[in-house]
Image (cartoon, rainbow, N blue to C red; front, side):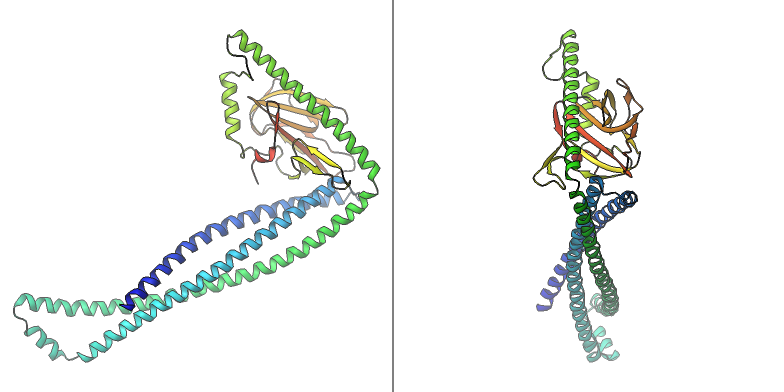
Length: 408
């Protein structure tokens, strides 16, 4: 009876280990995908920084790129730590699996040994024949003969099980050693990433110190940027109000309700399609990293100064092409002195707004497709990279573009 319960216990452990192994495989794959994406971000930021450093000039753009790289590196280390925890758990599960298999093997060997002992006691062929001829009738003799055959088959089956179980244990030990080796490699990689991170933080501090001596210049530049952003925001709001006014006039002529933002069936379908693609919209540039996030944030070098960002900023290669994140109609091309050109695209009741073009390929009223080129980004003097600023509005409400574009 005790052997039966031991078998059931071993079976439960093996089932639990199998479920845990499946979960481990899925979690490991997710973490490895995340690591891959973070490494791609770091590699691209490194490429931008290498070009920026060639200008021999410390700039806010360089600092933002450094901040992005440090943030990505910290996320990479955190992901590695999660993977190390996962591997340690997997080692524990694998040890339990080997222990369970060995316990099961021990039981099989004990059962087999018991059969061999019994077979040895009753090894005489004469005894077997007497057992057959002592049957009361032919049916009983046939059943006794079948018993001998089945017993022999069972012995053979037990011997095969023992061989298979031993091979399974050997295979699981190989897997266990591989996991341990992987864990050791990951620990070394994590230590290396921490050393690289420390160097990057030193470099950041050097850039911050350099920019501290340009405080007046930075404040003046910030004031210009804020004034320009305010003008653009006012211009966008005015354009949207004009769109609403025209839509209401058209609705009134058609004898339809003119409250809110009236839309044609086609515009409504486009609006719903845009909303349905939240989190899946393509980036407004073919490649880049987010170096400025939505919302209010402290200025990277000016103490006590906060900066309001109505969208996101993406660092990309110099003079890169900006593109539409979704199909729609160009509402307006706005020109802001000193800040280049801004393209505003309508998608039903949603608007995507693209900043910092030196040259644009579209005009108001043009229909654009998803990923269609809109223009060439400004290449600022002394900078080795360009910036794309993206905003998304739902009527007059500003939304966080980072939650709308595809997360790389």
